Structure formats: structure tokens, C-alpha cells
Image: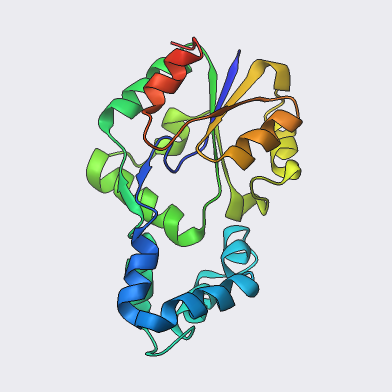
Length: 207
């Protein structure tokens, strides 16, 4: 293996996926499930994740999805509540890996989350250059307008970074994303959310 591609959430950066629905449940009570179903039917989350919907449009879609109407601050607070922490040891790990491998980040993400991450990296760890400091390239779904598990996003990364899939390994916490990577010849590895990425790398003989 010469190339390692990491998913971000629950691979490198710890998340609590229950936080977003919990916040909207607090805001809307019994109306929250129906609001979520309407937003899903309108593909609001997918559109935002692939750059098809701007942040202002996205925030308004959530604000008015049920009653009471929410403030912009409430929506943004709820939306960013998913993030927990990226321990300092994982940055040290990325430094070690880059001495031996090409290292990439491939994430289904959106503008609000990407901005939150940039702020966190500077505020908590003092990095204003974490993308270029720790990765050879970063691929965010809302910027390249493609998302996992669609085949096209993996083909895009392979072409853009000029990678041989047979020399490339990909770590993700979702089975469908791993399977899609494997379908284009990349070695896909499922990293359960409860497993530290260091353990997953050691299991693959990469350390």
C-alpha cells in the first residue's frame, strides 16, 4: 500500500450522531419526525452535502420545517452539535503516516460543518493549515459536488490524485461506503465508530 484515504467523521474526528435529532426533538417535540421526513423527501440534506443548496437556503429550510419557527442560531447550534473532538494523538498519527504513505481525506461534509471544523482546528489545536499540513489532498463532498457511496466520487479521487486503486486503502465507518470503494478496486476497510483508528491501522499492518 502506498496511499491511505480516510473518512473524517467517526474515523478521525469523533462524532455523536444522536445530537442533531435530539436538538430538533427539543425544539419541535412531536413534530420533529414529520419535519425530518419532509426534509428528506425534498433531498435537503443531500443537496446541501453536494453543494446544490447554499447555507442560507439550507438554514431557512430547517428553520421553517415545523412550528415553532426556529432562529438561525438555533439551527446552526443544532447542526454543529454532532462534533465531539479530534484527539491530539491522531494528528501525531497522521504525521507518522505521511512519512511512509500518501494520505488523503474524503468526507461527506457541508459548508457549515467545514467552517466549524476550521474554527475548531485553530481554536483547540492551533492549526490554521490542517488540510495541507496533514493530508496530501482533501476531498469534501460539497466542494467536488459528489458524495459517498456513489461510484463517481471514488473515481474522481483516483483520477485527481493519480492513484493506483490496487495500492490504495480506504477507512470508513459505514459499510456502504467501504463496499463502494472496493467496487472500484480500492481496499475498503470498515472502522467501527467504537474502534480507534490506530487499532484499525495496526490490524492492516500499516504501522
